[in-house]
Length: 131
Image (tube, rainbow, N blue to C red; front, side, top):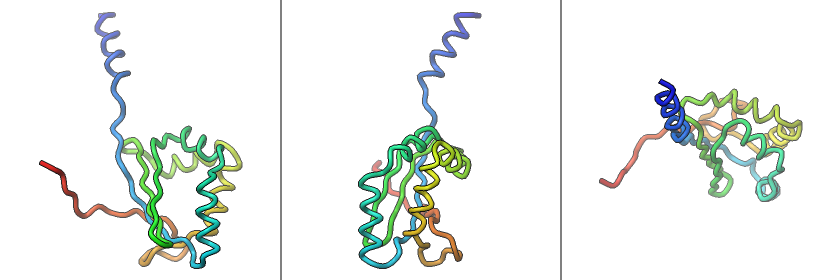
């Protein structure tokens, strides 16, 4: 029985959670100064912010842009509660919440978002996989 339990623990420790990608979009407010400032901040993300992401359980965060439109792809464990993860990241250090407030000043929603909404989840609608 002990050997069976040890084997179960060994194999479960070697298996990682299934990760999924979540995709979100938003716009940076109009103006070259807004765009430059937003990009400059992201070239030098505060270390407390990235530590908060780590502690909250984010596996990877990638940002892409085309002009003022930003696409964010986050890798998180399947079934993750993104709202809870965001709160956990912000609670790590006061600078994490400060970062989010600061970045929100540069952000606005894409066409079709509700007033005051910035990041909105993009729904997948096509996928190709090589056979």
